[in-house]
Image (cartoon, rainbow, N blue to C red; front, side, top):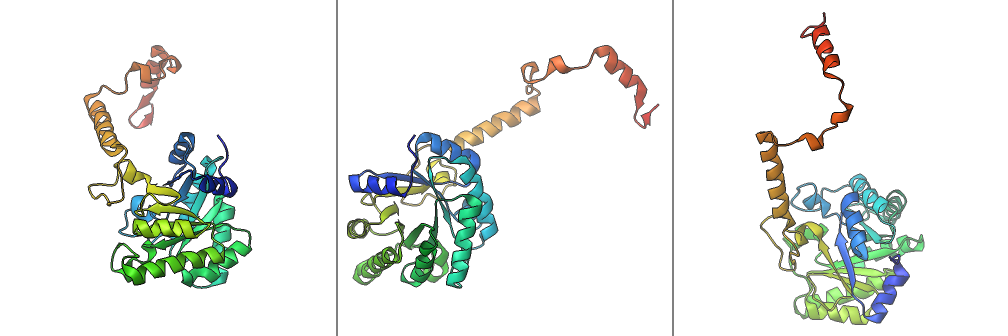
Length: 288
């Protein structure tokens, strides 16, 4: 498998080849995604919802991102790994942003960092890039701003909002971002941004006109419950299969049909005579 890097991903964009990206948060899943040929893994702060059970991404900390990020980083040799900068890890100052971006790169062995926002975070993007750290931007619906938006809502509807999102895209590109996630952006606007910028555009709820797509793996596997966002396609019902498998295990244990002899280390057992001797030497109170 060819190693994915910025140059190879840019070549894919130039050739019109689509780029696949999935969110992933652990070693085992990342190893499988790489074996499947996925181009890029995003260790998203969506782990606050998918792995920790919060209602949004805001409680996630830098230390938590590093734990999950380095687990993925250890699994990947050929897959391009992007790690999210969590809420309030870059907004306070440029210095804070650079320091935390550096931690993610060093401690997770990431290939790039991602931060949310348009014009407002361009100083942070420029400073991080100046340190030799690749940046993926994230505009449109930015989950860390959920309270400002009043919920998870489509961004870029109407002429004024469309202009704002396009200007954000042009601004983060000028600041040095090589890739941008377009979340919940109308398809025609996302296609225009893809045309107008040299950045790799990764869509989630932004239509097929982007250079690539990203999905949360729990969503695509049917593991995220009954609510299915409009942009999600369930490629398998792994959640139901997992529930059935757990049920089979539970019933086998309770019925005494697991473990069977084939699941035990019978040849390593002591002799019956020795075990009988031990039984005689030990009582409920200890040695006789």
